[in-house]
Image: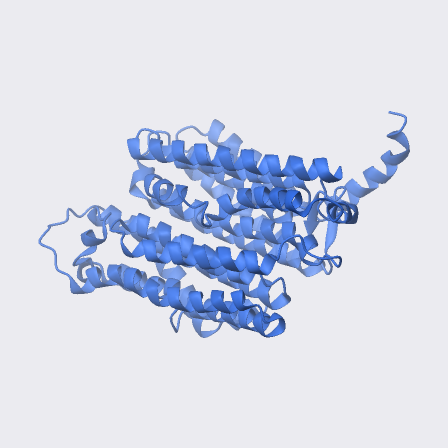
Length: 498
């Protein structure tokens, strides 16, 4: 106690100064409690009231984030180096908040979730709580906050995947997800314990940690780093930590799939950048050639994800494997660690996420109106539902990366960042990743356009039982499609702020 007292004023000053940069997270904490209270108080109407409160509260968080982006000029460590705030982190948080609002609007229009006996009040509470964890992941700057934030998001994801526990497929998916998640958490925690044992510090931005690591056996350091990266790779769904993705995505409700395939992935990329940044800019040398390591991971992930997607007949499994492929593509931008590369990564992740959410919302739409789950079930639906089908094709074109959609501009920015880095370093693995990205973009045409082919060029003798169409879901998808087209024609409206 006597040793603590002299440092107490300085620690309190550090906490008070950090609170000014922690306002969005404070707002999220209050919002979580409000949504939780609304769900407990308003029994029968809790879902609707909780969703209204959550959307309004996230609007306040977005405003606070915009103000934070305008005021944060230089990187700043908060709360005794536990968190790191800088402009890329603020952009990642803003993207997460905007997408969370879109997901909250999407959740009640999925027929399976809408008729769930528990209602959706709990789901909205979980989503808001997970957004707080996602913010912390993006800002995590020491080993403890990294692990705790990942666990916070993981628990929320487990609960959402198991939300339809009355269905066998959902129960199986949640069990697989939890088992894989526990294993990856244990592996990551072991890597964290090794780094702490080696250095006696948990702050990755502590210069003494890097200096100490250079005095150790490189093999031991590499092992510890790889174990930690394995935990992050699980959240990304990168090869070889991708085995859970197709089964979990297929077994979960479609809006839940939209959540776990976008928001945790964006936060995991932010966490990856924070973790590798001190090692990348280490002047004494590198423990691992990070460019080569990430390039190889990117290549393998792109190849596995895109080629496996070709053979899928279930729409959700197809989009699951394509999501693995997109993770590999985004890893190309992540390995740049330049202003151009981080900007390209931010743009790519946001465009992929909004297009993926729109695509899955359309999967819910066609499941609602025609019971379509397999690709063959979409045969002839393009004529019966032309607006939804055209939107589906446009969003698939964006995911492929063809003009004149935002996906084309996103992939172009990533290619440009990688090629610029290749000219500076001459690393042939970067050129190999660039070539693989171009190849897999062509490969993705085969499975994305398989859906379009069935929509408009195949006929079905099945008479689909038409149910009541959710007009708000269709409106949401149309708005997403218009945004994708506008950002394809006028990308500067977004890219200039990244």
